[in-house]
Image (cartoon, rainbow, N blue to C red; front, side):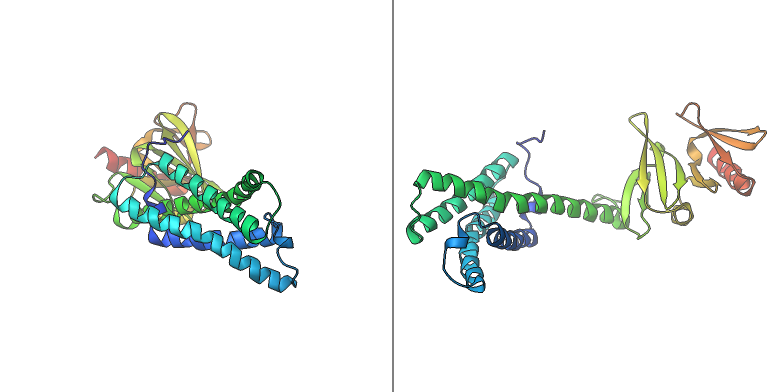
Length: 283
């Protein structure tokens, strides 16, 4: 369960994201109201379909002005005081209520809807919740993903905000986008799986793995400065985590620190590389 006392993510208050939220919400509201007709839009006017679209669009966008005004106030409020997650959620609910109230007053005063005002308000708030909460949720997820992507790219290109990230290994996918980073001391080995690679690592002492769309040939070239070394056409190992190499009938096998009952093959092609890496680690 999220901590409602936490400050809202900074990406929600970026001007560019606020503009995108308003535009996307307006577009979604326009499509939603004209297709679903939740506020009786199909009986507003006895006109052609295109005239109906024009009139309903004006009313829809007028209602979205509630969101515009609200977000402007929120933006300036956030510049002077802390805005917590629970406050943001209450603010969103207030947007839903006041936008629903706008549509209710329009139906009652302009369209002369005969229904009981509280019933009409309840229906309008319910429909407005769909108009606002769906695009809000989608954009929050998108903004969060976008923010994480930017942070990962910054780590890859420049390091952490306070300086370079030491002792970290970064993995990029086939398109060059940073997808996964972890401490070198937790990395165990890589395993090829067709057009993917499994990254095996320790997470709080437990063996875990992450699936990356790439191949060992590409990663072998990108990670030359790390302790990873190719030991087989299907494996790369962290040479600093190798506990021993033993010879068996089928050839050399590697055992890794922290993993019981696991041995990885060493092909003759890469045997010299592996032994050389282990020798450098000891020296």
